[in-house]
Picture 1 (cartoon, helix red, strand yellow):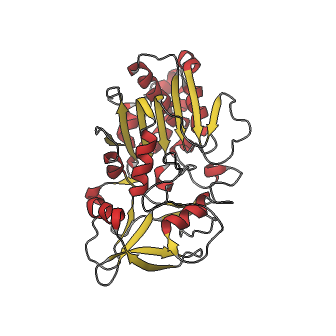
Picture 2 (cartoon, one colour):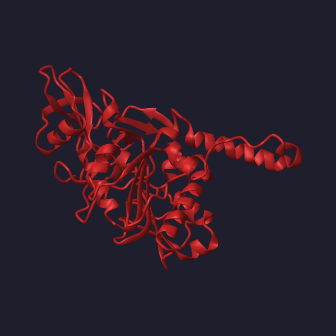
Length: 355
């Protein structure tokens, strides 16, 4: 749930089900994708506002501990090695919020790597004051990236439509008004129906719900496609075909608390990501899915407590190490941040996430 961006190619749309554009506010019922697009990214939308940004509303891995940025910096160094230490190494932070991850990664890099790193923060909101002038702020990722594109909690805020099974067992589009009230619309058809049948078959039970992830597949394919050589990584709340939630995951967040999703611009609107579907959207195949716990362990973040003997020889060091272990435990905890999914797609390099 970091700050978002809805770019997915040169047309500026997320794709799937026709274009979604932001214009004058509409109060009548419409699909959740169009309603969320306006509420989040339209004029005065939730993610267009000035202020504290995502950190004022929810706690992500970036905000939980600097260990996360350090791990991403180590991943960038591994990509650098796999690329043969190019003269210019790109780091692209998708949906960069206020640039916290970008700045943290740059600060954690060895000096020799930092000198060659060209950093991009990709975000629709305006550039925050005080950001390192060496970070390029832009609304879409550059083409021909040589390095690492990292999308932390981006795809969960690419708007999607919601469907619900009616009394006759037919999946229908859920329409929503600006106050959050819903009613059922037309049956799902076309590419959306094909996606649903392949990735989230609902059955005929009345009230079963799903989120159609096609716009996210297209958004991820477009973003990952900007990497010419290197690695593209998406980190997010996720589920796979073996364990789809029967009633969907659409929800809202406001000021640190989960709340009902209301598309009036007052709250974040998010839903978990079908990362397995996103993985299949890119050609050639070869994407890898793993948990954040597995990924961070491979990058040296374990949560292991420091040896007790250190308390006698270096009490201050022991306290620092203990605090770091606590932060690492939060980032890798089962049932929490450790269960986030990592979708990793390499281009022209081998596996750099083997522990």
